[in-house]
Length: 264
Image (tube, rainbow, N blue to C red; front, side, top):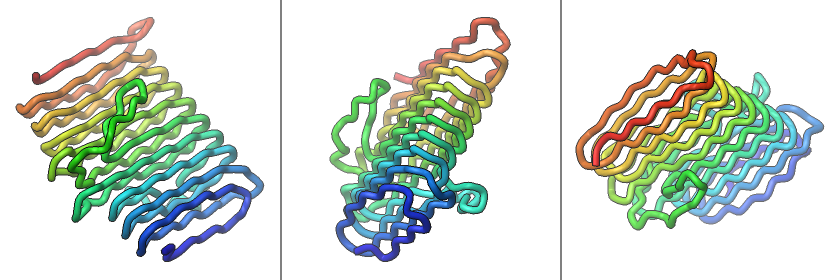
């Protein structure tokens, strides 16, 4: 059952599959005359998709399985309909998959605001995805409860990430924020305890891999900037809590490189 479906304009293609009751889908087009493609698949109860969009040639694919999940405008400032849409820009690809197979589900949340062009975002909650895009099978015990707030204001960025529990814990958090262009970012969090991962990129052409895994409470905060790009690889793992913080201002001609591995 669809409780509410709001379509303000009709210059986009919407494909939709909804199973079970009490799901809410609200999609608002705030600019006219543009062609966009949106696919929403919902299987479960009390799930919500709620966002506005502008721009042209954007592709959105949302797949929710389980209960209490959300994809849409960011809770940090509310709906962006008045300034062009929660997804604004051209030729962006956004793919969000959320899965919970236990009861009660903690409720995954994925929030976004993309004001640039030609960004490619793929994010999986309840799965593990590798840096090469390989998607592993769903957890045997996935309780959901993961949170990601995205924000991308630049163009030609690639963002790939995942969050998974594999036990009764949940609540992995990933904030992100990317304001430059041509960045290639991969993030992964898996198993528990609860993990946090904050990333802000204020320049362009960075190549970043950040992985937190294992049973311990790991945390990371990274801010990158400067006149030149940085290649960053961070791995925190194991059963002992690890913490990493980096504020990078790369002024080295040809770029900078940072690699850190903590835990075993």
